[in-house]
Length: 272
Image: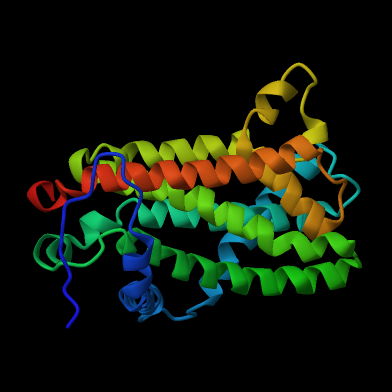
């Protein structure tokens, strides 16, 4: 008979990856529940997933493309901003859903034993489902506009994975902090809104003034967004340092977020 010994995590311990894998069914059930609750009793169901990037792309096209006349790397502005919003929405959804996940499931967290990290991790399932629906529309738009992304499209899953790791790393840390400090619920939307406009999502990096470009290039989301557009729209390949930086930062943020979560996990049941 196998015996499981439950011990508190160390202050700087990494997650027990084997334990998480063995309890993957719990994460799946959490994710399945989130998807069902998200679209239950909605009149148009999954179409809501398409409305957000479509509406945002339309507004950005009018403001940045029409009024401001910003360049879009030779890509039709609506398609340019829609593809950018797809990646941003994936990142934003993971962070904004993972952060309050522990507080939203406080009854389970305080009374039932299971790897607590599975709660924020499970939010990736619904975010990816929304992303895939939007991506299908994105493919239709690429065909309609006659844009051929080229061989770079083969690397698209890699950039999606990096967006997920970066968003989940932030989500893990903020979900742990929100248990102790509910202020996170007020600060996080403000942070994400600023990050949206500080990242070339709705505009091209070539539209940024040369004096401000170093500040934009210091943003890891800029690297990921440029890589994403390279794969989806066939724009110029970013320099190698951005590719390496995107991989290192995404993995680093995920590991740091995991450590922060593990360090705070021992106090969840008392504080939540």
